[in-house]
Image 1 (tube, rainbow, N blue to C red):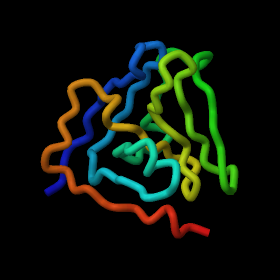
Image 2: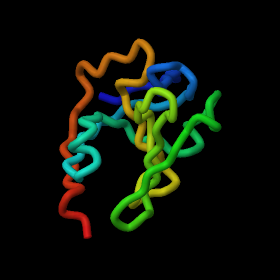
Image 3: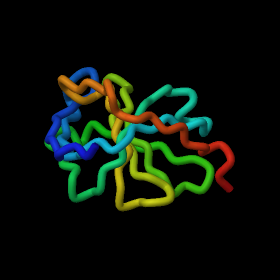
Image 4: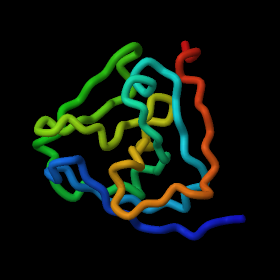
Length: 119
């Protein structure tokens, strides 16, 4: 069953970083890489054209590790991880669905990504 695309807004905990995405939510992902495992986030993958940073660019801090390709963003004020630029597909964002307002993941397939085995 295909879903229609929906626009959601989201934010970090303090509300300083705000963003919007549009997605049909084909699946959600949990990854087992060292970063994702520790932050326990569930993400949706969205193309950069479906992502809009609404506020708080100056509040974002970036963390990179391993190949220094993926770009993980965190709010400097509250420490929440709202999104990252993906390593394999850098024109996509991985968005932390826990940061989306009024989002219900019920019924969306959950895929386990094997990031720990990536070279």
